[in-house]
Image: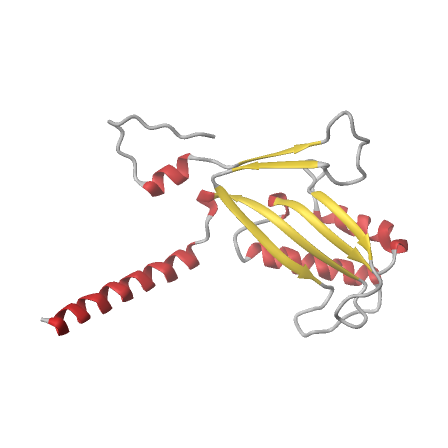
Length: 181
C-alpha cells in the first residue's frame, strides 16, 4: 500500500504508520503441485515488521528434553508460540518455517503436530530438511520461523526503552552544555 498525502495534509509519522498497513499474500500457483500443509509463495509488502525466530528445539524452560519425537515437536511449537508472543505475534503472522529433522521418518508426526498449531488457511512457506544431527544431543528436530507483523502492531516495550534512552541522551547533552559554559 502506498500512502500519498497532499501538501495540505498534516499527519504525524506515528499516524502514517497506523494508516499504512503491511499486506501478506499466500499463493499456491496453479502451475505448481498443491503442497501438503504449507504455501509455495508468501509475499509481504511493507511497511511492516519482519521477525526472525532462531531455531527452536523441544527443550522446556528447565532445559529438559524428551526422547519422544511427538513430545519434542509439541514443545518446539510451544517454544515458537512463546517467542512469537514476545513481539505480539501469533502463528497467523508466520510466513516461513525452516524445519530440520534428524530422520525423515518423523515427517508425518511433525505434520500432525504442526497442523494442530496452524489454521487451515494461509499456511507459511516451509522447507523441511533431514539432517544427520543437531547441536543439542538428543534433539530430534529444530524449527526456525519468520513472521511479518503490521507496523502498527509494534510492541510498546522496546519503544519505551528507546524513548528513555533519548531522554537520557538529551539530559547528558544539556549537562555537557552547562559544563562548557
